[in-house]
Length: 71
Image (cartoon, rainbow, N blue to C red):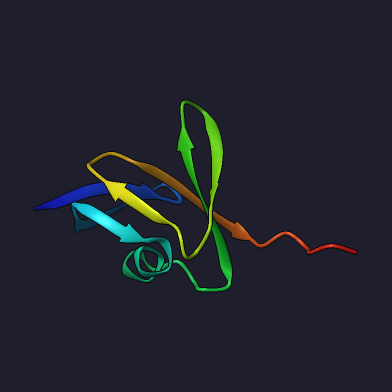
């Protein structure tokens, strides 16, 4: 089933179900070198590229430049 999610304020159509974050980013047009957060209850939850997420409908995501590593 195809559902709607919001990525960077833009509605995107994707298949419902389980996704690896890196594959989801590719499907919704987020560059591989950007980080992706899911917005849950107004809080930003960072997602790892190799993490599995479940898409149902209406999820909200925000991409951003990756933060620097350890110094």
